Image (cartoon, rainbow, N blue to C red):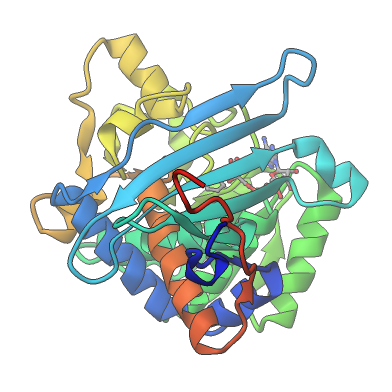
Length: 344
Ligand SMILES: NC(=O)c1ccc[n+]([C@@H]2O[C@H](COP(=O)([O-])OP(=O)(O)OC[C@H]3O[C@@H](n4cnc5c(N)ncnc54)[C@H](O)[C@@H]3O)[C@@H](O)[C@H]2O)c1
């Protein structure tokens, strides 16, 4: 007979509980993400390449598996993020991305939680962008005019995390190839108290008017190719990874989250590596910037390209799990593991 009383615990954390755990905690989450980058840069993580599942009959869709292990003394955890991107969902009134995160106990390997993870993924992406904006502008004039190219869920979270970690802007520019989505984002910005909100008719106008740029489009191929638009040397958070023409990056200060991860999957930096046959155009990683080994020059455009590391999802997911447990909101599945006796 199985001994269900000794069954390893397993819980589900629904999206509403994830949102409650994260609400108003942008600075805490940015600190958790910074710590995860420091563990990763210090060799205390395992973060193999993401695995892309694609479909011949649905070429715009993909599901990505991000297995990872986060070490360190405080909250070690293993796990897997499994995240879908179905861009055509927008036409059905559903977000593009949906995801779950599985957390595994590093002592036994047993999965102990399944968390709704589109919110965790957006939060860790936005916290990483806000952290990068902060550390990459330490040796430059702090940006005061932000511009968002692509105005979906990720843009909204990046704005929320910039505001929640202390950024204030005199101007907030918006550009999307869909005028309807740009207007929707303008509505969000105005409700959230942003000042100087302006919708731009084209990317050039947005770029020239911004000293901090956030690219969060779903462009599959580069569509920004004129280096003159960047003559004012903005700080660029290239979250969507494929907007900038590779040749434009040659003269930029290029910072990535992880070199091996980012030089893959036809990101703009990957295309540039293929063209040049080397990686010398990379200044370093965000960890190098955090440790002071690399700094961002004032007289160059600075481009941060984050591929998105599974260890960030684990770090934020573990925090969400612990907060949800503390608040008594875990949905425990008693007896989830039922075969506990080897010989019956
Ligand atoms: N690097 C990371 O860690 C990371 C993590 C999460 C998401 N992302 C990326 O962020 C991007 C945005 O995600 P989302 O969930 O907000 O998507 P979304 O579909 O909600 O929004 C994307 C927006 O981009 C607009 N757009 C597409 N092509 C454009 C173009 N050429 N010019 C201007 N606007 C354009 C669309 O109209 C849409 O409004 C995706 O590419 C996603 O893969 C990156």
